[in-house]
Each structure stands twice: as structure tokens, then as C-alpha cells.
Length: 153
Image 1 (cartoon, rainbow, N blue to C red):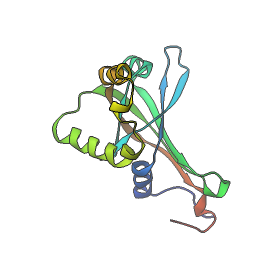
Image 2: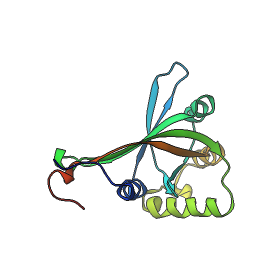
Image 3: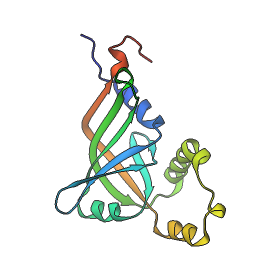
Image 4: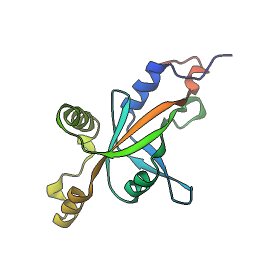
């Protein structure tokens, strides 16, 4: 029987080009919270520019997981689930430029320009956003049901 698992290169190509990721962090009582995010993948590390309580959860417990998926029909389902650690960081220099370039490539066509937002909203987001780095460990789950159908991409 054919394997639905993705190769290492397929995993990272899929993650890099995925539109939305789901980051799972842990509340203080251990309950997982899964939230959709835009992200950049640079050198097999995930970067998100985010705000809110997830920053508090990450500061308290850096264990996290990250999921990207696609497909609607069973024969189209493809996903990668990564486990690892998340941390708030200050991005600078070459790495900041790489992450911003990748973020722009993926999301510029979908953004609301700050000058089209209410001024208070633009200021709020500018003041509260932080970079988070998600560093995956070696535990990766992946599947691509198209492989079972003989329609590899």
C-alpha cells in the first residue's frame, strides 16, 4: 500500500506555501487553544507577528504545535502537524528582512492598508504586535491523500 506521508522536502514546501497556520498554545490549566495565524517560514522555522493572550500563554509555557492543511474532498486532504517551542523574540537585521519579505510575498494582496483602518485600530495593532518564533522539534505528522489516489504533485 502506498504511503501518504510527505517527504522532508514536501513537508517544508507545503508549510512554506500554506496560507494560514493554526498555532496551538496551552492555557494555565493545560487546555489547548488553537488559533489561525498568518506566518512566514524561513529556514524551517515559523515566525508569526501576533498579539493577545497567546503571548501570555507562550511566556508561561513555550510548548506549542503548528498545523497547516488543505483540501476539501477526502482525496485532496493534505496536512503537516509540527510540535515544538514558541518564544517571543525581537527580530533584527537580515532575519527580520527575510521574514518580512516572506510575509509580504504571501500576504500583501490580502492586507488592509493601515491608512484604510480607523486610526485607533492601526495604532493599537502597531503598539501590541510582537514576533513569535516557533521552532519545531523532530515530531512531524504529515499526510497527502492524493498519494493514495495516484495523483502526486
